[in-house]
Image (cartoon, rainbow, N blue to C red; front, side, top):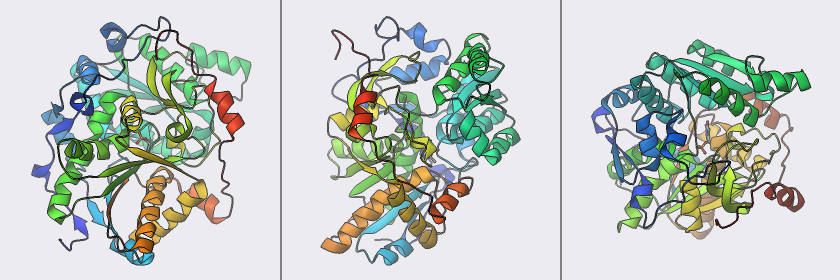
Length: 456
Ligand SMILES: *Cc1c(COP(=O)(O)O)cnc(C)c1O
C-alpha cells in the first residue's frame, strides 16, 4: 500500500468518458411521464428547453459517453480533484480503518455541481442558447451555473427562494461576480412571481415557485434554455468523472474501498462517485458497498415511497419514478439546504430499490459533530451537506475501532462550507436542533403522491 496523503492524477489522466449506469442495467428505467396526460414524455416534451445532446444523454442506453474536448478543457481548471488519505482523522478515531476522501471543494465555485454545469453550458452554447435560467436552493447550483455560463459566453439568470437569498448575501455576490443576474423569488419580473407578490408582498418563496419563474422565462424566449442541477440522468452521468478518477486514484494507492459513501439530496454526487464502483462490482470486480447518507429531516430513501411523483411542489414538472416523501413536502429548515429535496434521482432510486446500494439517515447534531472532527483533523471546513457523508464514514470507522476490522472507506466531500460559516456558528452556539420527521407528518406528505391508475 502506498503511503501518500494526497493521491493526485495528472491532467492527462483525466477520464475521457462519462459512465451511464442506465446503459449497464438488465432493464430500462421507467420513463418520465407527462404531468397532465401521464403518458411517457415525448422527445419534443423533453427537448423544448434542453439541447438535443442532453436529451439524448437523458435517455441513452450506451454505457459510456465521450466527454467533448471543450468540456475536458474547462474541467482542467480544477480537475482531476485530489483524493486524500485521512490519516489525522484515522488517528483521532483510533481506527484500524483506512479512510479516504475525494474533495470536490477545490472547484472554482466550491462544490461538485460544476461537473454538470460546464457540459450543460457547453451544449447550450453549441445550439445557440443565449441565456440559461435556473432556480437555486442553497445557492451552490446557481453559483456553478453562473461560472459555467461565463466560460461559454451565455447569460445566466437565477431565481433564488427568498428565505435563502436573504440569509446568504455573500453567495449572491459570488454569483454576481461570475456575471449572473440573481432574482429574489418571488420576483416581479415573471407572471407567477408578480401574482405571488400580490398575494403576499413579503413572501419568502419556495424552490417550487423559483422553478416556475425560471421555466416561465425560458419558455417565453426561444433563445433561452433551462438547466437542472441534480436528480436527472444527464446530471448523474456528468458527475461520474468523480468516481472514474477515484478508481484510478485507488489503483495508485494500491488499495480498493470496501465502502463508498456520499450525502444525497437529489443523488447526483452519490451516483457520480458510486456508479463507476458499482460497474466494477457488477462486472465481477470487488465487493464494494455503496451507501447514501441523507438527512433525517428529509428521508426520501429510508422512509419514502418508490412511486411516480412530480419534481416540483406545484406539480407542473413531469412525473418520475423515484423514492419520494411527496412533492408537497416542506422539510424543516435544516442547515444542509442542498439536501432538502423531496425526491431522489430515478437512477439512484432504482439502484436502491434493487438493493444495489444502501442508505441511512443522519440527524443534524451527528453531522456537525463529524464535521467538526473533520475540520480539526483534515483542515477542511466541509459544507453542511457533505457532513452527512462524513458522519456515515466516521460511524463506519468507529465500528472498525470496535471490531478491529481494517476496512477501506471512501467518502466524497462534495464541497467546502466557507460560505456556510453561519451554520457552524449556529452549531457552536448550541442552536442546532434535530428535527426528525414524525410518522404523522410523513403520512400526510406521502398523500401528495399522485394516484396513477394502471401504472406502478
Ligand atoms: C447540491 C449539493 C449536494 C446535494 O446534491 P446531490 O445531487 O445529492 O449530490 C451535496 N453537497 C453539496 C455541497 C451541494 O451543493
